[in-house]
Length: 263
Length: 271
Image (cartoon, rainbow over the protein chains, first blue to last red):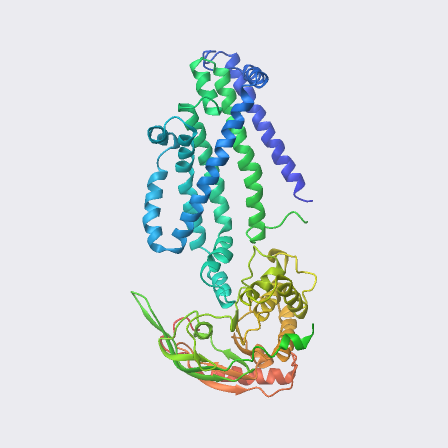
């Protein structure tokens, strides 16, 4: 286990860094550098989060945001994969869709909210629309790039083993592009999460974005900062824990990274 | 199952005929005569090794037979039928093993068996295991590609190519990146496999000793555009040892043939 020691040291360093940030934050607050109504202390944030958790406000909102995210993301990933596959296989589809997607990607996810509300009204459909528009293009482009960069000998080997047509796409092209697709999905998840919170910020009666906005309206800085921390935590949880694990496994299996699990 | 089942009679070895084949690569800026004209007849079950200076177009020749490229002039026929594209009757082994990292070794070897739609999953599995045994990889059927050494990967690639019982085997310097010891063992195994399965084999290399060790006939190619400089029949008993003095002697003769080739002006990459 030669990796264990450096890893533990890196985690220790990270922990130390986070503590340092916390101390700095406390110092800025204690010295009164910013008015107390705009910057709460770490302790005030912790107390407020505990209150929100206890009075049953926090959990339903976390749940609502995550459920919206999962549903919207599944839809977005399905569309992104199909369009990306089309782009990867057809130069015509690629030249049309790539420019469109690159253009759309310049829009921040919050910029999709007004048009979503006009198109879909005040329901959750508007939120799903924002998630899809925020994240689909990145996943389509990653899928297309993955397919166009497949090592040609995979395709040649498959063809000389009698594979052609649809089977060549489903049994060879898509799995061969998997490392790139997973990177796209990871990025899409982060972008989609931006989309959910942005949409909830403007129109919703539940969710993390709603709690953020409610905090601002009540001049409750502790709630605003607390919900921001929860949003970061939820985003990181899936990105760093689930997707990073999947990505790592794929990189090892595809021979891009050394296998450290068995040493 | 035994050797009899592997050798089988369902798929007879192919006869490969090239007549007046040339290949020209044209890009907007350049036009390169890569190959030919070449006419060559490879008999059923024959093991032909193509040697030539690097960059001479050996791989292009193999790609034409495999159907990855189409000839500019002339034609390639397998048992009289014009080659129109890649097909499972001609299995190819590449310089890189080209195994699929998303499948385990058994599924890699069984990959080409899907075309035999009459086979059940259990039958495909049985055949895959049989070929893994044949290349001495029993026990590794559940391993993934990154867990194998270079030599084991090429063995698995060989099993994958042979499992669907192709009628011809095309090898593009498959052992080039392996260490000497591994290579030596694979020469022995490849000869054994050829003796058992009798697939018509076209094998490309620039190693003359490899050629002498494996071939029934060695076709010596010129620098680019490759044409046939000479054909050397290797009439040594099998199995041959890589370091056998007779093999060395043959290799020396082939090398002399290669050296007799002048470095063509405009030969491009050729040294």
